[in-house]
Image 1 (cartoon, rainbow, N blue to C red):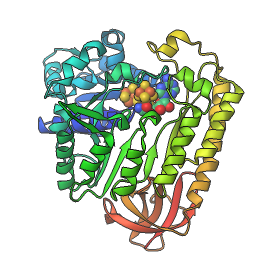
Image 2: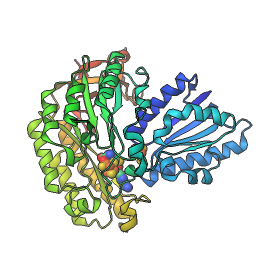
Image 3: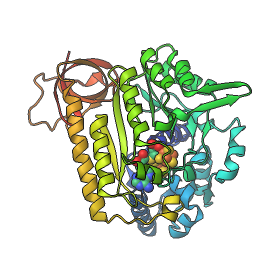
Image 4: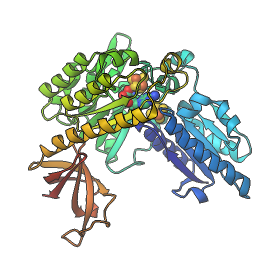
Length: 461
Ligand code: SAH
Ligand code: SF4
Ligand code: F3S
């Protein structure tokens, strides 16, 4: 069958989609970019903000209409976090949904599709948080989707590798612990083996993934493997050129991790460590378990220990009770940290979280909007200053491919065989330059000649 798969949400969802794609291809299906001609339409969904869910509702509204009008309507499947949050209610609201499949049930998706083709619908949710730990912790099939992966499927040269599932932090605004279940770390040997296979298949830039990747901890009998231990083991793999990890929680960022970043040459000097707010009062209400002072200290330690470290953050504006003073503290934190970039989100109450239960969403939409714009402007200034400091340097990039503007440039590249390419530095900067198309997936040295708030511009060396 021809299958269309659209992915919303975070890197974890993108990885899940990649792993599912491998399974579907192995089962003899075909993947298509054209939704209209597909026999099966799948949405891998996200629940983190209302906006993410609304996008899926609008897609499902379209599918419902199509099902009414077409002679051979497609099979419609909803995957991932929204299924976990809503379960059967989602199917009740959208009877056009043939398959509802929670994040940990994805390995059974090929079977669910065959069942749907035979007229049988499936609603498969993950076990409840309370029972999930027992159900998964000792289950050798816990990471069957990851272990069975085809290392050749995915973008050129880069790959994500899951090191843990779930989250136990329960920040008061966040749905993730409810939809992704308890935090369970994968066996280090399984992670190392997976990276080895990926590197052997030419995917030599690996990003280790976890909701709070740096709280990775695997215990077996007397032996405990911490995140810095894991970094050491993975970094040793022959042929692994770049090793990254996202996303980190400030509370678990010990110097052992920073020292591993300094000492192991293939670990990239990039730290994405969301602060969420610069105000102690709000951090407390968010349940983040650190103070502004502790966060500032982390940034200072990172800068002192890791040469040329590049920092990135996340912020939420308009959290319940956020005053102008709290907001100013977030702006101040962005200036002080000198992030390369930050992701800034407007608070969105998520049903079932402590925030939605106990706090009133009292910041008007217009105030959230201007605070969002204000932090974006402060971040743009910090980002520009950060990128400008790199002008004049020569930096290594992994070339991703033609830029979105390739071919639409006002001025054609000087060399007729060239087009505008985009690549990433070790510090995760986006670099744009002219070069031949066949550089995609390769490393190149770029002389940096210009900068904007989000991008470096340069010339191929
Ligand atoms: N596990 C990661 C990312 C979680 S979700 C981490 O802990 O950093 C990604 C980002 O979405 C969060 O960092 C936070 O900034 C934002 N976010 C999460 N829940 C939100 C909500 N209810 N409203 C607005 N933004 C939210
Ligand atoms: Fe959500 Fe907090 Fe866990 Fe991140 S650490 S996934 S923000 S609960
Ligand atoms: Fe969204 Fe689920 Fe990721 S809620 S942010 S897709 S873990």
